[in-house]
Length: 583
Picture (cartoon, rainbow, N blue to C red):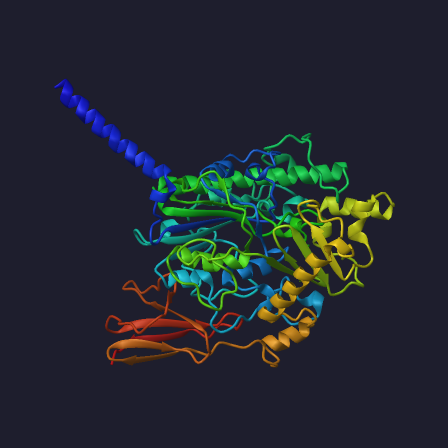
């Protein structure tokens, strides 16, 4: 009996050992063919967290994610602000190639004197979420969009404060996006504080949740600063970047910045807890990243690294490659092709990015990243940038303009007000005054390793001429390839997007026909996405629109709802056809 028990114990130990080795050996781990994909997206986020070397505030959930995943320190947005960058993420296209490079094109246009418009990508371009839906994924967005165009009804299964993977069909793979606005630039304004609506991340999927009933103040959806959850002592010593003065106002903004990050980390933890509770952790690829660089003055909107560089963490099933770092250059335009590559779908040729993971991973790593800065709300500049692993080249198309342009939204930040006060009093040092120069050089070159704050322009140094020429040539190639004309005035851009017409084009009304007992949907507008709903037995339409891909059958005497939408156009009229009889 003892011998038998010993053999059983030995075999059991061996099996457990084999399983453990498989889980810890990346070569033995296979990512599911259709993995779930969870995106955790925060706003205005530089490398301010411990996994990337900044230990000012603890982020236990992000630190755990990094310990179990891979960190990517060289991710760059295509713009120093959110909407153009989100256009790149959604389409895999550079914003300046599709008319998405100016901030806020479809709202708040009175201050520009221009018509509101939307980015108009080529007709074949679809949102990445729609492409995933076409491949069987349940796609939810919670809840910010902001793409420089209105998302077609086919883009998401749901996009709302209650959107969640829990609303999908049983065992359906999902692509779920959660946006965390706690770290946004506006979190530095007064009134300041923990945003009431952000508590939704603790109650995901609970559509009965009401803010006020949970004992939280709801006036303007904010606490006062005194009532804000505090994760960091006010007297913390901060590493203030050299372009900002060390004053009480700046230190207080730094406190807000880090305090908001800690609150965001708690929200990330709440979502990850839901994933674990649902038993989905090990068949889900988790991405965490920011929508561009930091929120402080001389960070957001600029195309220095402080405005473009944002940290990324990816956790793979069974902690594949856990605790490692991947130093390759990655651009936001790479996200869309990478998502398709991860689910085994070849990215379409129109996408301008490179897949950096998955079946269709690019054979060569990216050598350069590219970025653009144009109009931001009421102020306009024209700047382009290209960066390799060490050097950044910037071309200023309006050198006669200063760097700093008075932007009302940014001037709500106390540290911005402090900068302006000290500038007017002549109390800023030479480094801090750089941003306030009344003109710019036509070309700039920075060694981002030796000079991470990009303060020393090397463009006129003979020993750097070869690098200058290399990056200048690369910029010319990029501009030509993506058909970016930096000198094109915005009113001319609108004219180009609308093919010379006075008003925004409208998607044609879709047509419903039947043939061989199947329904066929058509739209004359080239590239339009078509969505449809079939009225259910209870007389109610389903919440989400099905993406039309091919002819389909209907139950007898069904009622059908159809809508078409090409990105950048106005959506079509909604067509309702009652008692569709198949022929």
